[in-house]
Image 1: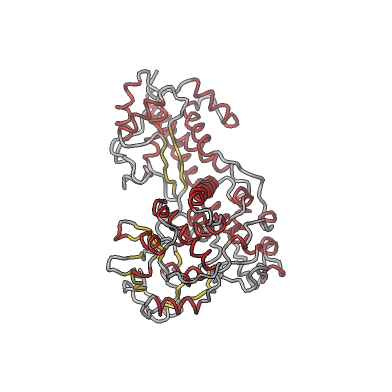
Image 2: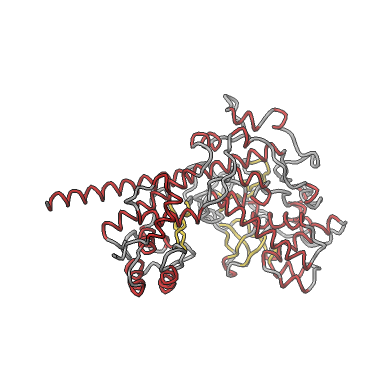
Length: 539
């Protein structure tokens, strides 16, 4: 048997999953496809329609969030920043009615590269400062850093609710939004429906599960911290925490800097190397223009889960679709393959980023190794070296290691291997595309909407559904003055924001999958045509 053969047991397992499109000759392809299907299969929920997505859903009650949160006015917050925190008068104003909600806008001309913000160190809420300001006691410092900061925020908010505003950051706590729009604020039904078919579904569930677990751990030490206060605190942290580069990536809440909004493609980053937190803009701004920063090279799915928004389709150059491949646990040489991969610094399960501009060839090399089935398992280390030499994982993204495609390693199995791995990728993309419940046309219609700012002209049926006249200006009854500053909108508006952002993610993912599918099928046709030409010439 050749090193690229596949065991009969794996073939049978594949046929149970892929029988609908499983030509008998595509044995090696289906083995990997089966592995992928098991890896990505998630509950798909009911088929989502625009009308169903527009319906309000139940969510956590506002009374679960400490009442003082969101009660500080913009003017009170600015007085605290300029007076108590000694923030220098700068070139930016805080504006609260932007499309993104809060944001910083240039008051006067801003030059490219000049220093903005200049936030003093004493304003930062770091782990060390949270411990020093907290009254939770010695057990507080034993918490993991995210949990430690969440416990501090919850403690401070609950203290203010009890009438104690002596904390150094009391005004800042009261100025924080009640809700961020991140996935922690989503009803379970929305997570299952709006993210159906997307890898984001698992990421969202993992986020919620990890936070609930952390809350249980914190309350085991500090039962006085309520679940609602802690859930709000984690929501704030995911949407506002900054890593300080000159301090080894130390986490911190940075008042004022956390008012900056993200823009895809922006290359302006927070810098704390000079003893203050500053921002050097990557372009010039005129008065009235919003100043942006980069939250990092984040795909729209991650922006949605952490921050509650997604850029319009096509505007995020950092979008990618995570394709997960791994050694089939039913493979007769599964343990030996895993050992060979670990010997190269790789894992038996790896993630590869698919992008609109292509996919990494290392994906094909890795796939050819997990597909191979030598008679003698002692050959596996050498096969791994041939396929993957030099492609060691960095940050979990194998395909990001080499800048030039195909300069390291090889696809095992010759032309047969080149065909098999591409057929596998085609099977994976086809399967992934079939998991989205909405039609692409419907998702595009939803993704194109901006229901919070309906056009004066023709309004789509979707916009009419999600923004009826009675809901367009409505507010939660508990907070009659709710707005972008407080972070509370009427539920129909919030539901619409979730629906549109999720649709943008779905469309972006589907575009990448369709482009990858088209590319590998084109390559397959070319390889097979070349093989036929060679065969005809040899006859």
